[in-house]
Length: 344
Length: 220
Image (cartoon, rainbow over all chains, first blue to last red; front, side, top):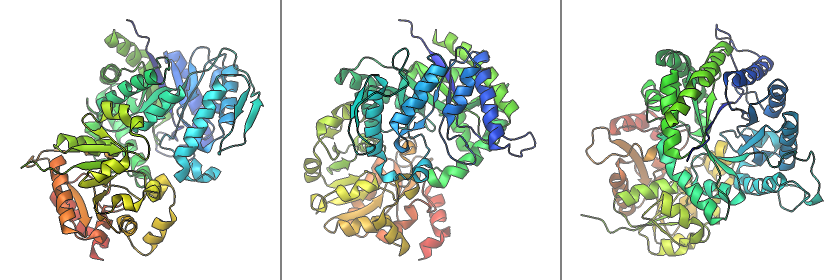
């Protein structure tokens, strides 16, 4: 059986710097992200995703607006969220924004729904993190209903009820791809299967192969719930440069800095160079290196995890637009073709 | 000597399955339970925690010598203290408002200096609570486990007021792959919390002890 693989790039709108290290404005970073999305298509990348964040170092709360700008300048590349923090949003609004993107782009929209590691939106929009599970469950179920098209009747605790509500704009060519992002909770895998979403595994630390059981769990859960087979996506951070040394020299200081920034909030240990080298090595979760290094690792993990889609979360706060454009070019023009070759 | 202790792991999210797998690997009979029907976690158990038995929480606890609480702390108030009376309880939970929201009881406790496990123990008056297995991230706990005597074996701290319970949990810690570091009574476990000197850290025993001693909190 020949599987069709797709390869994407994701960004959180990581705030970029000039070559001398001074940060660019939020606005310039956003304009650069649009250029990067347009270039991703030229480089041959299949998907470009923007994750929702609300911080000074990830100033990207409305990625769908940037995606629409990319849509207007591209023809083929699929465009979506990575992720949309659904629990602190209104599923009707999310559906409307992405069905509008689907219209603008001629049917190229996708969404990944989840929490990501982004929690800033909860206080910002007046939600309580303790309610996260309930909010997500209910809102994801409503989103699944909205995706089916047609009038929606729904009642719950997290938003106003809907009675045979026609939600516009109507989808032109059926439901767009919708994934639920999971970071390692097996009950979230079951939920994705039960609600009829595809599975996006966010793997940002430790050996990726430990997630193989989750792919199998997803397949078995789909069967149990009478759902058709659905794809598995792997999302992991990384950086591609001409050589392993150069990729590490660019990425590692920025990685240390951003993890130190979020360490307290998320309970991460501040990485050491040794721990970084392990993560960037063959058994770790980071894809940092030359095109050949990154391609071998993607191919091995895509195969081990039974995935058909891989998204590299490129960039970090503090990298330059030029470094990111180079990484995008290498990813699309060298890494992706090499992974396809390795996967046969 | 193989211990006959039986484990009940409450929670099948990020943390519970990891501790359950490690305990199964160490030879413990393990039951796993959530707040609901064991049928709901049958598939998870089969594929992600092979060897564990999915059960109703009350049945799992009734047959257990050690109960591991691996649920989000904001769900802790849903647990009936009577269910856990008379058992050794491992509190592997963390109070982490940035991630899980602000919880009044734990916020108030924190303001008078109490650790989260002391507040948990206050609600579980009939149980012997040991704070343990909370400070190494669930994504690292399995990868960093090593057999006794391995040169790269790391430390895992624990604290509790009941010596027999502490001994049982120290043995569990040791058998799943970490050098147990007994810190003292439950208040001494505050150093294991988020923001403390060893939270999120995977350290050798000397590194662990140095980090704890350097922390001002350990003087209180």
